[in-house]
Amino acid sequence: MAEEMKNVSEKVRYSDEELQEFKAIILEMLEKAKKEYKHLRDIVTHDSSNDIEDTSPTFKIMEEGAMTLSKEEAGALAQRQYKFIQNLEAALIRIENKTYGVCRMTGKLIPKERLRLVPHATLTVEAKEMMNKNK
Image 1 (cartoon, rainbow, N blue to C red):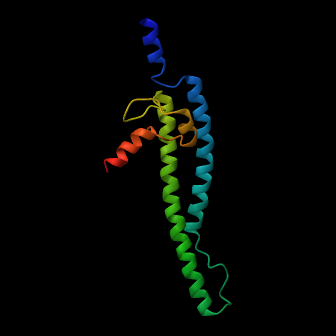
Image 2: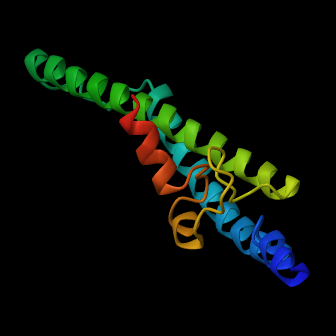
Image 3: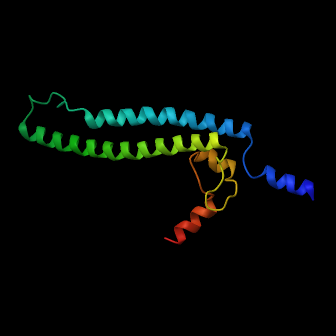
């Protein structure tokens, strides 16, 4: 009976070694995400006209329209990237608290395979599907 309880308690959270593995994955993703976010912000805040003053006015209007659209798209992508960065940073806090990888709905461990692909996940696939059905 005591052995059985020991096995159950071991599965409540990931080991410190496993948490360090996830931390390395998250830090790498965070670095890439921050670079991408900076790049997208640079696109949004860049105001040059790309030196098209010497071309026809019609072309300039078309060019400005295309540039506005790309700035809008870059702005939307930057917002998504910022949210992703926040989620990764929250995952790092859960690692420090040793609550990382525990489903916030069921309390079960989220499979390692899922966490390697989506390291900021807070739900098991089953819990996520249950939530989507209830929407």
